[in-house]
Length: 130
Image (cartoon, rainbow, N blue to C red; front, side):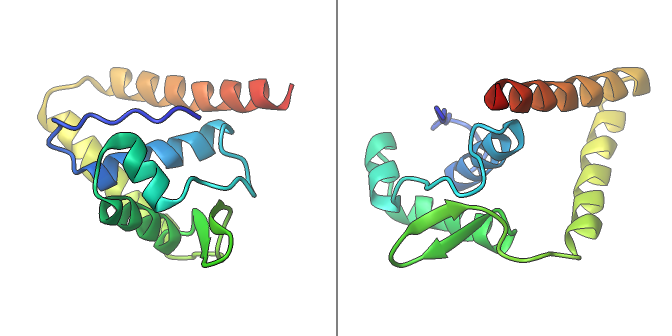
């Protein structure tokens, strides 16, 4: 998987890294059991501090997207069933939708964007299994 970060973005680098990895998991390009690069390797690849990568990996671990192990490093896969995920996801979606409404994005455009993004993830997963 190729990860691209915008080092001049207002979005913190650790958050961008976390988001790209979650997108890779959703798209199937980072399947369950896949090892992620070490924090030092990924930091060197991007020219960023390894603590930034460590923060992203720890966030992914807390959210149940990866398992961290001293011997194997970061591995894609659920750490445990997280029942609070649904409530948290709903709250984040509510805020994102509120932003769209506040900026005047029409409801049909919001729904079409959601459908297109979900379809893209489904298509990418289908391409990976072929």
